[in-house]
Image (cartoon, rainbow, N blue to C red; front, side):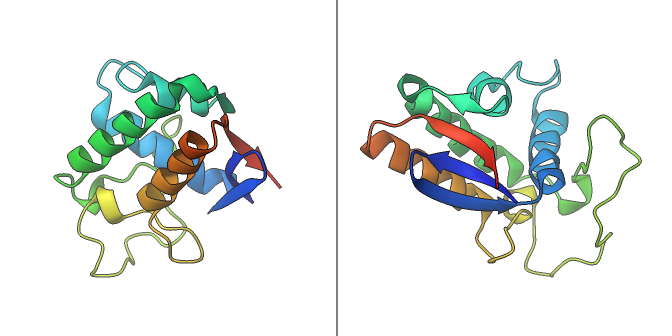
Length: 137
């Protein structure tokens, strides 16, 4: 289980593969010049494990923009692993009809939308002046 951590606040995402798919989908669909070239705070700093508090507000802006852009991209464009484009999600194309775009494709095993989870974690880090990290339990 991996998740976002702001000190003792914990926001569960899911498996490492699931989180990597989230990042892979963003990079493949929205960063034509490569991983982290358009969204460095999310794709480079946070993905590497730790984002210092002073960069957290910029991360929030990136996440908002990413979600807006992914609303125009169909769920069929999901990328499970950017290093191996032949890999597919374990559920294949068997997804809920409520999933209408890549903006609402990702949800944790509690059913929480991943973008909403990221926004809550980011806002918590801002409110309490904390770094934001990706951690594994």
